[in-house]
Length: 295
Image 1 (cartoon, rainbow, N blue to C red):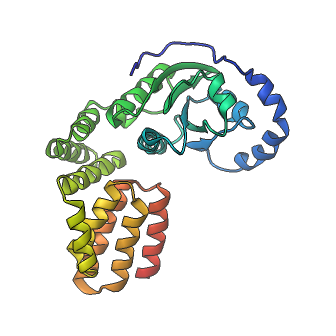
Image 2 (image 1 turned 90 degrees about the horizontal axis):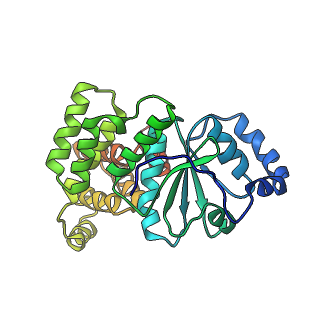
């Protein structure tokens, strides 16, 4: 991956101005919806919305293009990282997701040759890019450099050397070092939401490291109301990408139990909320369901 940013015109096989003209009616219809809402952190982009969502938006904030496809395994690894970092950025940059199967002309215009492909657009120009799924620590460093080059937004957690060190330890599988580093960040700033998420994620990965998935699942099936067995399977499901299944498992467990066991399941569920991130749709849905169970 190259993290060197340099200006370069966004040009290719398809004239983007022509695309914008052909889709002007669609853009006008969707512009009203976005005008009354908050500044988005993630947007889905098509030919119809590219001019407004990417070219025009990049005049005020950096726009990061994520070229992906449903069949692309590495895309499923990288996209959640980008979405999470965009949420943490709180509008200092915008993630624009482009499905290459549905928008082949845009992919061709951007010179995409393989996916996932990520390109940074600023002032209507591509100023940086990388291809392939890379570790979160490298994505954070790339975003930090993008914000530094463009001079947009407040300092990101990615720019904090302590945060980069913690994330690198997590990426390398040194969970004890990652936990210690995230705990130090939280001790210095208890309100650091990114560090809280990082700590919960490091603890989750430490818990599932080396587990026999088959044995965990068998134990959970044999003991449906056992807190330890159900929490272990929920951990595995969340860590392996089945976030909704893992969270629903514990919501349902809380609904069935009472007393100290119910409280233990609830606390573990809240820890998983922290690990996934508060803005994740599965967390929002599970939190709503949990509130219905509790209140």
